[in-house]
Length: 92
Length: 194
Image (cartoon, rainbow over all chains, first blue to last red; front, side):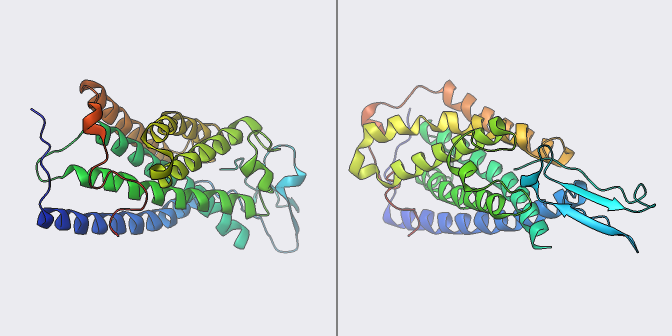
């Protein structure tokens, strides 16, 4: 019932070549996926956005100094509401 | 700008690590179920499981290092080493630390398998069944993108793949001890393909 054949040297070498190709391909794809997901996450939830408008003072505070979300951007301007900063939580 | 790159890289690497970890768990389950379809040698499943484990660890390191070194998050190295020591979402981040340390134990025991013996390696390897769900819960609880549509798709696909592999594994009886003995490609002292 159980198939458990010993691979011939030729089959073994072929399998190892296939394994190397698969490993290299997956590793490369994973590296590319990091860039893609980073881009997508930046597009969907910027988080690090800093609102800047002409003539305004912008201050970004480190997350370590906050007690809640690690992103706090304040803008002292009459147009602050229009350039509302993103407050995104997360550490992962 | 650099801070932003680190922040986005952390999130991207987290998603990729989840995918790779899910693939590793699924391949591990298929390996233990002696999965061998036509044209797919068993040693390929075992070798891919081993090589992807190391790849997953590399991306896990990227995920942790970018999160910790990003001055914007200010998490600090303590949060990456000591579970539940983070100032930010200590429980959810702590689960990530636990999962990372379980993964480190799995990899270390696999690299030392010939020294520690099969039984000890097997016992440590059971931690894999805890590592994956803990990592998933960490992502769901603390991941910035956990609620985003694209991330939900990834989570569903990863969960589905592991569930399918687990179902396949449970449908088959466990291998007899003689069949578990390391043959070609099942040793983990070094990555296959070298």
